[in-house]
Length: 226
Ligand code: NI
Image (cartoon, rainbow, N blue to C red):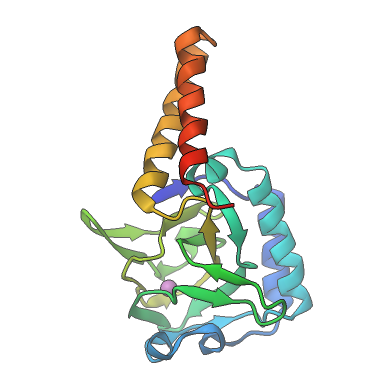
């Protein structure tokens, strides 16, 4: 499932992010790439240990923790500490699949990359190109979202970022390990949760809604790895 999560960051958080990005020092993005992806990765990143990256990570993680849509879609078990990148002056990232397991250098945390996330930080009118192109079951999906919006897609997807030919594309990107490893099971649970929320709003908590809610939790109990 490829899903857009709108307005993960509010205007104030975006402003803080951009101030942090503007004063930070950037390094070659190859520092966190695998062997194959390093050959096709042309962008710059904030070093994971920089003070600006630490402050920006806190803003992203706080925003994720209050986002019900993100939680319902991802059912996160472990989140890799968010990274930050920038594409400008023709930079791009050729076709690749993200490494299956990411190990965080500072903490030794292992995260199986069930879901890849990109949180857009720049106004889409401020740059040309920079679309994230994801090979989905239904063909290529081009993603370029308003600042503050995020896209989630399966970590198994082949994807690339098109060259940025004007301005700068700023984003946060990270991976997460879900309590529900399988994308099809996770998608089913997400759809079921959304249907139950709508039913509760329309008819309230009647006996059938209570049983359906129970089914949702019992499926999670059957499949979850916590
Ligand atoms: Ni990637």
